[in-house]
Length: 409
Ligand code: SF4
Image (cartoon, rainbow, N blue to C red):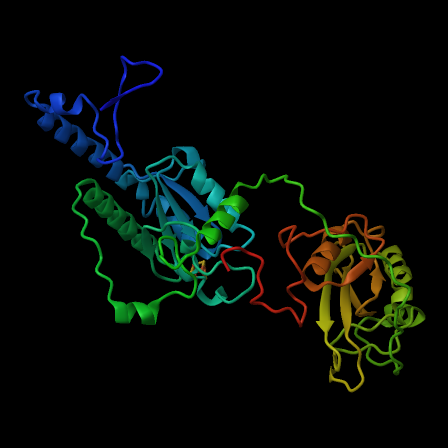
């Protein structure tokens, strides 16, 4: 024991060569009955901790329905002292039930950080455990233990409420064992480990780089409104391609609409595909249809075609392009629909319908975000589905799905 330089009367413990021990600890141990009292309090705390596991429900998809069912009257998870709370601040256990996307993972991590210690994480269902059949998709996290320390895995697709109860009982056992220092460390089976080793280092894995954890934490702590450079809205391009020549055929839309489509440049009305309209006429067509009662914009869906391919399959000499399909319908009884599509060169753009149909605003944003097609004149073109700083457009045919910007990839 040394002496504090600023206050010579204050002893300073040198803790560098032995674990810290409070100066009163030894004296307290000599008090009669204290160890019995401490053991009793510890037992009481363990009893309370294992019988009041309050769940923070991180339910995102089908497994979430089972989680809700577990809390409902038939299964009644409450009888175990396990209740679901809507705030992380009073919860002990985060149950992740469902698929977690790359965009959502930082939010999950932030909610986890907001839960007080001690806390535990449960991965409910194969999506939370490994990403399941979405595992290889670009937006899906391949298992939540790539960014959360998971205590209990509940297998199934989905696990039923009884499985969740079994998982919560297993968690209580684990907590009891840990508090009683009874936990026996797992002896790794090296051969099995090499066969079952996950492709991405999990939390606690010696091969996991500290950079990966640091990047995750930085991402999770990023303020929701942090200034992220927005992608520059695409410029309008005059280079628009006319629809290919063909003959009018089919009668599925009725003569009036067929005539209207023909007046706006449709040269063919296929039965199983939207008629192609020259991009230069497409705004006028939308306005004319709206004036005839087609007031609801049902969808805007874009496809990306690489050179040599198109809606008809392989086409020799075909340039890379997009095709954007639009659907309108009348509102009310006996509703009627109409569809058309526009061919857009790879470096070109298609006029935005946002001025004519308010719903085009987010639908066009989504198609630009995911597919990359440009909409000239759109009032607020920025990412909608993907994170603001995402690189590229994941539904383009040439998007390499293993080049992720997410730090856990
Ligand atoms: S594990 Fe199955 S049930 Fe659960 S979220 Fe995934 S797909 Fe849905």
